[in-house]
Image (cartoon, rainbow, N blue to C red):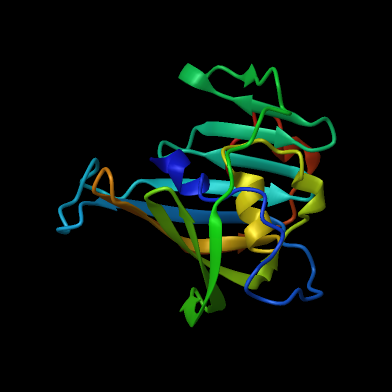
Length: 203
């Protein structure tokens, strides 16, 4: 289900907010995730699991709830690594087919998360609907990540015009699951090439 939180769109070239000229974000975010039924019953975890994505320029990596490296993408080489059982594995086909399209709707509401004013859009695909809250202040290099095949990651960035989502609420009506993923910290930092290796620790 963590992967489904990223798999919320396809190649969408529009967004709700007009593009702004702001410096690209470099650093990490800290997220908490929660899974519930429509009746509000908590699923999977008694404590909200965390995750930590890092991004800088053409590079992206993600640490899982155990703060173990889960994914690493090197944009200059167009290489995506995954880490089953803690061992690095280079994805053989980084040009693999992306999922089919989703319908996008810009909503008139806004929200403030961690002091960032967020726009809201809704993505709908089959019986899955996702609300995405994102701030234009957290823009990253969309072109640099255009070949990243990581579970709808680039597709989601296209929908938000290259800005990082701070909250996603995914409602899967067929399986009676609502998955909420929300940032609890934004940490701008200067990242260097050695931060994006298969052995780099989280900072």
